[in-house]
Amino acid sequence: TTITFIHPDNRSETVEAEDGATLMLAALTHGVDGIVAECGGNAVCATCHVYVDDAWTSKLEPVSDDEDALLDGTAAERRPNSRLSCQIKVQPALAGLVVSIPDRQS
Image 1 (cartoon, one colour):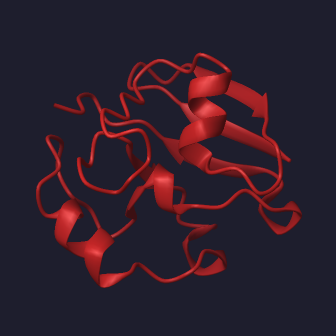
Image 2: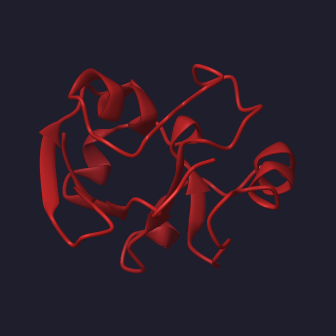
């Protein structure tokens, strides 16, 4: 499944992500800068924060209460389209997903 990451400098990076993996893991596997993932995807640190392109927000699973609480503590501004990439499972329905990486994670 193709996922595009937009960096803070507007540079885009497209990767082929494995279905069933998390968006965070896809970023780490492909060496995408800006996804720190200090907790390794255990949803306790919020250092895998991304902004989901508005065209895709309704296609994702809803934000859980735990994710919502962690998003309140992100280093970069929380926005309505903020998500933790460790909580987004890659699947064929997300082919073409575009997310932006905040200017800082910690």
